[in-house]
Length: 401
Image (cartoon, rainbow, N blue to C red; front, side):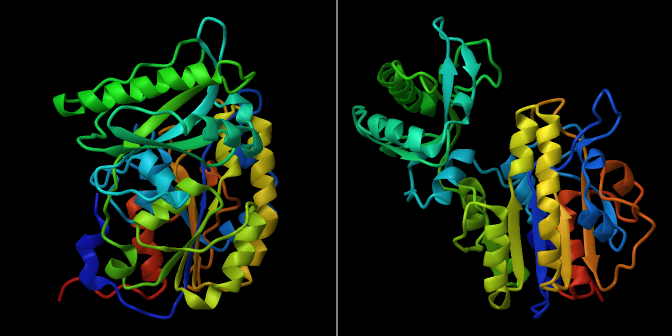
C-alpha cells in the first residue's frame, strides 16, 4: 500500500480544484427480503446521473477482510497508509472540539450508555441522548478528582464526550471499556504493557466514581471509554501534496482528523446543507475540499435499513449544488461500509466514483455496489483515491525519466 509521501516529487501546485465528499458508512449489503443493498433501494437520481458520467469502482479501506474504524478509513482516502499512521480516536475527538492536547496527555472518546440493575449494557449509546441532556452530566463528571492527575471531561455532541488526563507518566497503551455488544457488563481497563499500569488504574478509578455519580440517571447511567490516545503527528497534506486543503465537517471527530492531516477546518453548521453552503462561500480560497456526510453511518450502526435508505435519499438533492461549483474533480467515496444488516462497520469494498472533464461515462447505470463493481477503476486500495483525483486535476507530474 503506497503512502502519500512516496510520490511527493510528482505532485504539482495548480489552481485546479478537487472536492472529496466522504459519505460515512456508505457501503451496505443486501436486505434478505429484497436482495438489494441500501444504495440499490434508495432513489438517488442525482448520484445515479453522476455515475453515468464518471469513472467508477470499489475501494478497500485497509485490507481485504479488515473492518476499519472511521479514522483509518478517512486517512486512507486522504492518502495516508492506515497501517503506518495509527491515530487513536480519543485524540481525534479532542482535537475536533478544540481541546488542547499537550505532550503526555491522554484522551479517550466516551459514550454515555445505559445499564440494567445487574450492570449489563442495554444501550451502548444511551438512546442517543441529545447534547442538552449529556452536557450537564459532563459537568458533573468534570469534578472527579484523581491523585496526581488532572481530570477534564468535555461534552462533544449528543451521547459523546471526551476524557482528558494530564499528568506525569501517562500511557495510551490501555484497553477500552466498550465490549461492543449489549447484554454484558462494561470491561475493566487493562494495561497493554508494564508502563501503562498506572494509567489503567487511574481510568478504572475514574469509571468507578463516574458510575456512582450517574447511578440515578434514567438512560445515561454509565459510560464507555474507547480510543485512548496521545497527540499524533502526520506529514501535512498541504505541504506534501502542494495544495491548500480545507475541511468542512459538522461532527467533531472528522474535524480532528482534518486537523491532524494539516487541513484548514472551516466552521460550519450541523446540517449537510450548511456544509455545502460553507464550501460555496469559501470555494475560491482553497484547491482541495474534504466535505463529510455522517447520517448514513449512524443509521447503519443502528441496524435500521430503512433509515439508512432515507439518509442516502436526503443526501442526493444536495449533489447538484456541489456540481454547480464546477470543481475540476468531484469524488464521492466512503470511509467504510456500514451495512444495516450487520449494525456496524464491515470489511466490504465501498462504492466510489470520480467525475472530471476526462470522464465521459462507461455504461454504469447507477451508483451502488453492484454497478460500481463493473466500473473501469475496478477494486483499488482507498489510498489510491487521492492519486487518481490529483491526476484528473492535472496535479501529478510524470513519474521517472
